Length: 138
Image (tube, rainbow, N blue to C red; front, side, top):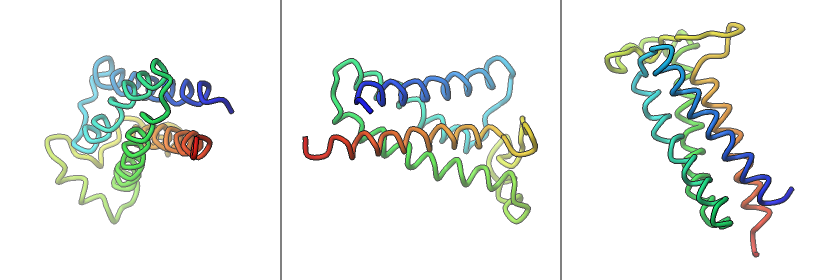
């Protein structure tokens, strides 16, 4: 796959994830919990990082996004487990003003906001890894 197509795909995923989080908080009125804020801190810069990478046609800018998306995968996974595993439910109560174990949405019984963020982080991570491997040694 061409570098430009991969970068555009990654950038598109990051824009959709950012727009989705803003939709849930600003339009639907869902107040983000502490773990949601951490995921936003990791996701929002990806729009800029990959946008600049496309604009400058510089693959070297992908590495910071790769690292941020890798960390984001772990935060999203933990957040999802706090929501879904009874053994971790108590950890979500101590999360701040809004409990992290609360699920504003639960599509199909398993798709929550951290699940959606996790899918975006995984896509960005895998596509970034592919891009980095493709351009290794160039």
